[in-house]
Image (cartoon, rainbow, N blue to C red; front, side):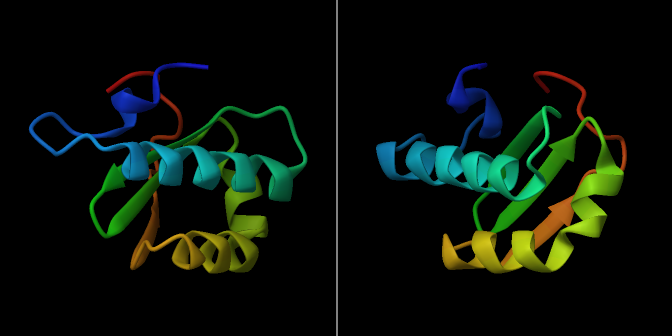
Length: 88
């Protein structure tokens, strides 16, 4: 798995709590999808931006994913329509 710090934009504060939240978000989505797709959650403070190698799975499971990510403290849950692109 790539370094979790790569999920946080340059110039944003890097904290253990933030990294833990990203890890929990990605693990939760993987569990919901029950698939071997690549999932990354980019942390933009109150916004979770999801990248996935199969976006259709995200949309099919959107309600569960939104609920889980909001439970983790994200106010907005978005999907990157370009899908998974690696480290950005």
